[in-house]
Length: 155
Image (tube, rainbow, N blue to C red; front, side):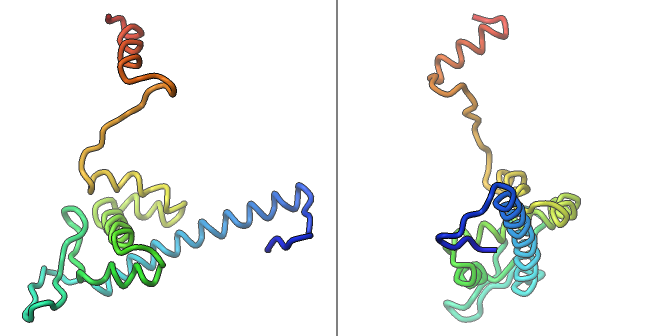
């Protein structure tokens, strides 16, 4: 269903259209995860391969431990297909490979639920440690540290 100029929806019709559009997005994300996993399979090798000719495609590991290697140009090709940068496509491939090979139970669950919700779970493990900046809005880090210490019985 599309919204054309001049056509007005009542509240119930608009709510139904929003629900349907969200379901379509979830289905598209789920399909994309499956297709990216298959794309990685099509471009994977069991063992890293060194090129025999200078400039030839190499086999590289883009995910964490336990993920298969893929052809180094696979991300650039995927980026063109999905209209995203090579780096974004590389991270998407890395996240899907990490999800499938390092977190197989989560991968199985993602196939039943919204895929985008699992990326924050798998991404930090591949990118390295993250720092937390959880504090109240409008307070400086120092103010937050002091108020937190007081609430814990310190300072």
